[in-house]
Length: 237
Ligand code: ADP
Ligand code: MG
Image 1 (cartoon, rainbow, N blue to C red):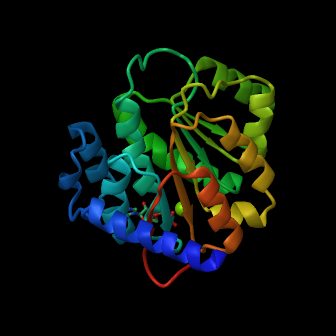
Image 2 (cartoon, protein in one colour; image 1 turned 30 degrees about the horizontal axis):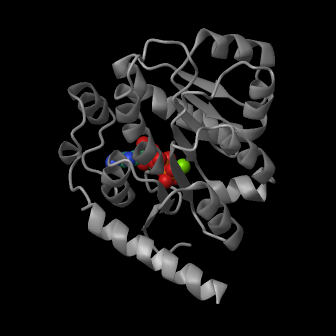
């Protein structure tokens, strides 16, 4: 019975998502700033990938999203580009009150890749990005966070350490991305993820990306996302 209810719910989300946002065909359809458009051109991204066509308008509209797509499908830009728009929309950006965008990824390599990709787009608007993961000096990271940033890209464990050290405040974090959620679960990060989510205001926008969608991630998604639109690309999940 529960399974049937869950299935209906996921179907309804899918249908409502389909109705709410027509996929974009071009980056020009997204209403991006000239600075962002030139950063996209600099990356030689000619048109959005399949997941980007669906995810960009959905996320730009403010919806929570579950994005299911295999590696290499262009998920990073799908969450980074709307994050830049989200941040630029915030009033009193110049205040140093902690990150607005928080991205969690399973490994330091992935966090670093996302950090580099975010910086390419963020710097065009003077948005600061900090990377927070193991293998770097905690003191250096503490100092960097204290200096202020609008985006944090982190592995869950190290982010928790930094929160405990009060290196940053989550009070104005309103855009949370859980990237490669299935791998974070496989690595045992569920408690850390729940703790981080619990420290971010409930009126945030939440994005969850995963290559597969096992039951336990479906369950977490239902708990921490509000009316998410589900976007599935390819034969995954
Ligand atoms: P995923 O997170 O889904 O594994 P990535 O975001 O890492 O995928 O992107 C995979 C590769 O595709 C990267 O090299 C990225 O720069 C490139 N890429 C992303 N979006 C586009 C696009 N619209 N056009 C061309 N290349 C793209
Ligand atoms: Mg990725």
